[in-house]
Length: 239
Image (cartoon, rainbow, N blue to C red):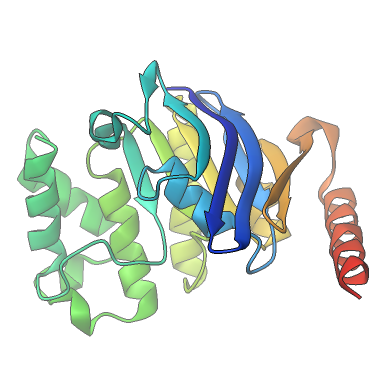
């Protein structure tokens, strides 16, 4: 499913967090957005996932106005952000069962157990989420994002807090979703991991989005150097 954002801006008080962002994502693309902390990446993901309303701009998912009719599109979206979006007193299995019923997921019990096994939480299936480490919580959020077979995945720093085995789970899953013609957006400051999974690359700095290149147009070392130059330029402009 295609996602189109047009001139998205988000102001909070006198600050502009996201500035005039236009972005289109096609099925089968993995768009990696690189940027430092405070660049506006999380705010953008929240807007694209309809969790936050922009100050101005348009957002279309498929043929639906996702700002006006956000309830119609949420079942097409799988989201990972740095908020739990779950009930901490419930177990991961109970949480998935609850959300799966909301999304009318078929063969729900099998789906829940399969996903928890895939993310390595099968031994903790009946432990309350509030006892989880950050990495375990992140693993659960991966399972929750995938639960209802979303057409679009919006992943904010999905590698954060994960050990090597969990990072590989995310890498493998992104590749699988791409092969299944899903649309994927990830934000990260990790050039190595973003380059590995991405098919198209953008920078987000001070709330502005810059299109860089398709993967077949740039190697990782050139992308890294370009990103470092942008960071230096940003610091110098502030001085």
